[in-house]
Length: 222
Image (cartoon, rainbow, N blue to C red; front, side, top):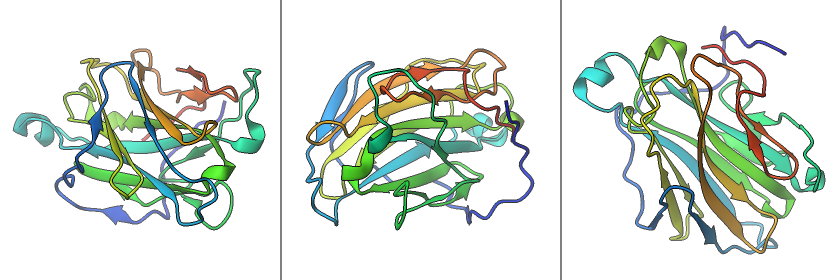
């Protein structure tokens, strides 16, 4: 199992003090799903995934709230009915690309409450994408719900799905928030909300069949 240590990063640092407001749309209840219709042959189609967090209360913000957006992905070519491991991830240390595979781009690391964003293009080449959040060790004890974290998925054309968190799990460094399934006609977003074991820094795993396991991937440390 590889261990990451943050030393340098090529990602630009974002300093926005607050997350932008989400566009109107669907807000998922726990375990629910919703679809976004899209054309897989339209080269201008893109899906944008945001991790938004406001830091919570004033006292919570004062203690720190550095969260990280991860997009774990299975390309269309790797989708299987079997449960195989791929361990693909776009995040602050592996920004990805829109011009080449994986056709997913992370737009930069925010060290303060605000927003981190990833864009997904070429839906005809996508299989599954899992939107995850990691809480830096320096944040100390605190739940993703306390930080005001949520995922927002939009097609930029008026279709928006917001995925809030409902559980106040204060000892998890990881949460798998939402699964985006491109294997059908459009993109189906399902609220996942699975948390890592207390103290575990092993990131989630997205398998080739679209299933998710917590505490089964490489270890993160920030």
